[in-house]
Length: 272
Image 1 (cartoon, rainbow, N blue to C red):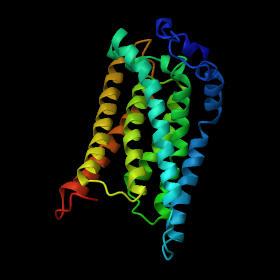
Image 2: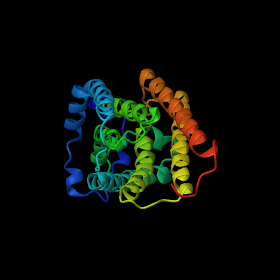
Image 3: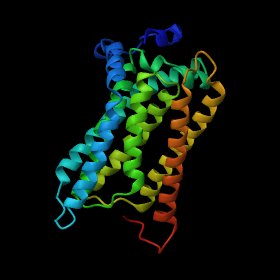
Image 4: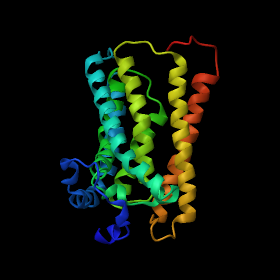
């Protein structure tokens, strides 16, 4: 664990702008815990699949639950978390882009140890477990459960925990982009859960943003294939290959969802 931190450029670690609770976060202890427990994501994933399809079967002959208030609170809480975490991680990202360049921003491990983003990188990984709750709301309310939804939640949980424990190159960009997208998507979920009708083009824009995000992750994965032998761009072949496959399949699934939902069939109203 300490060997990984030896590859961090000390010029990236100026603690300017860090709050005391961020400085005091024990990132070594957090990563040790993640190293010892990341395999449990496999167990969580199995339970998740059994639970959501079990609930879906249970609800088949029953009325959907009216969970408007809990769903508003849930979505707003994740919106707030995504916004705060994005701001803190982007603070370090902007510093790296302006002072070190794009390659350094991709390869840097400073996101895991810098006083400003280190707490939020850990919480980002943990949030992937919390976000499984999204699917519970879907099946309890008897909404349509699409493959890309649960596939995305399941694999990003495993990949995020594995990437965090290994201080994997590229995770800084993964967190920075994903948190921004989630800030907007959970805001959308909050508004729709309140019963407010949202223009259809806005939903299209959010799906497009997810496709752009996945395209960005695919590009970064390709760059890491070329940069992986650099001592400051450490990433294992299994993680690199699995992440590449994940992002390519998610890009294909989101593109297919966009095509089927917005580009095919009869014309629909501009309102959802």
